Length: 315
Image (cartoon, rainbow, N blue to C red; front, top):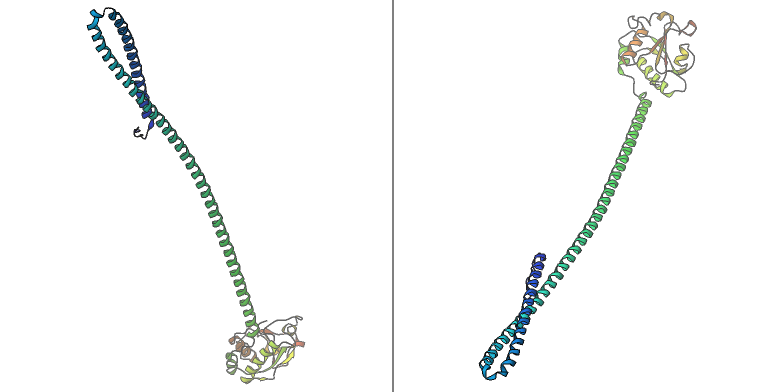
């Protein structure tokens, strides 16, 4: 038996099959009633035949008619039986289709449930995977950020160390330059200024045990001698502070100690045409600002002699 095509929505098909089955059942009941009725009628006719047999002669024609009628009834009975059989077959087919549709609907519903569960499982698994990837990505981003911060700190630390080393190197360079600056020769302006002014006599004293002071004193001695001054090479002696009568201690630079005849130097330097003024002017032109000292009488140099006390050049 060929099954009808199952539609996408099986519920209307099921209802239609149920309706067809009801109609078939009703037709079967009607056929059964017809059969029963025809059976009763056949029984009555058969009884009438017995009566007619008694009056055989009279009822011969009637018997023939009854026979004809009986044949017709039997034919109708066979037709009704055949129809009943067809209806039963149709009913069986309809019941089979109904069962098939019911099974199909069950299968469809089960498949829908399985699909829903599969979708849920896939979504759950995808969500878990997304969370895992997200967490891994966030952890990686945090690690990269920490690495960047660490590298930034390292770079800043190295930069600070380099800057510190550069600053230390610059300080050491300045220190070295300061220590070596005294080795630079005295400006030629010192001797040139002395040449054009009044010459004098000088004594040069440098701080004992100070190589820088001695080198500076030798430069001053060379300038004075070259300009025509009467001057002997430097000798070791007192410090500037001792020469000034203020006690011990160290003080860089040059002090010009004058005698009483050179009075007024502190008030009017460079205005008098005296050797002390010329010496002060020469130091100034060479970029050196010396101290000018008029000490107590017992510490003053001899008349007409200027004492030049030399300390370290830069301290």
